Length: 299
Image (cartoon, rainbow, N blue to C red):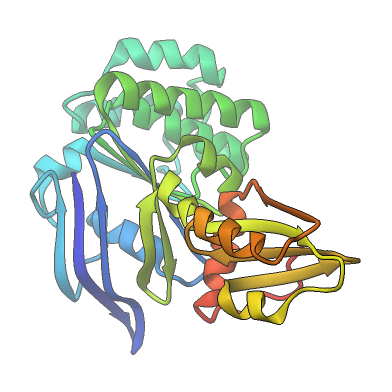
């Protein structure tokens, strides 16, 4: 559904995207994560047709989104700071969307009115950041897009509203096969909804896998020995990060779980177990491995 291949983008000599390649399958939820300045917003604005790539290939449903009314009619973008016309009320904005997007659904707009509970006579520009985000989702989901591009979209929403919005999004993914590309720093939230994840750094994807596969070859190993950690074992393991708490060692190790446990067992540890690893931890240690300076990480 969404294909990006070898895309570059420069701003006044700064390379925001450096040969970026990613792929989002139809009807899936793809989480794009990375540090500030990695290029996440840039690629989303290119997919939304706001920016034009300097080079490379961009396609949504097989077509370029740039100056393409058909693709823009079916693909909606919600930024971290949604824009609304200064004098427009929510109802005015709904009328505008209804005139622009062919899949606009007035029945759904009225139904979502009960979810968001905001008076349609109010002007979005006068609302708080969180309420503006609610209006953006209200309008966008009423337009029934085939592809939804979200850049830090839930920032500012309270926990109850976040859950409600995610429920609506996942309903559209399940029932209509909507494709979602979302950028967020809330990795624990993405962990609950994403099928695939791409980790960005310096304008490139450094890791792109299904959520299960992302965690599949990185493990948190808790291990202790009677007389200290054998240096031979430490050298044999591909250790990404290590901490010691008394006689207990916590290691973030890359490799196959069976191989890690087999190598560890050869040294007769007092305890040896694999602990659950979160997407947030995977992200931190991948960034650390790729030169992004992460200090004082608490496991």
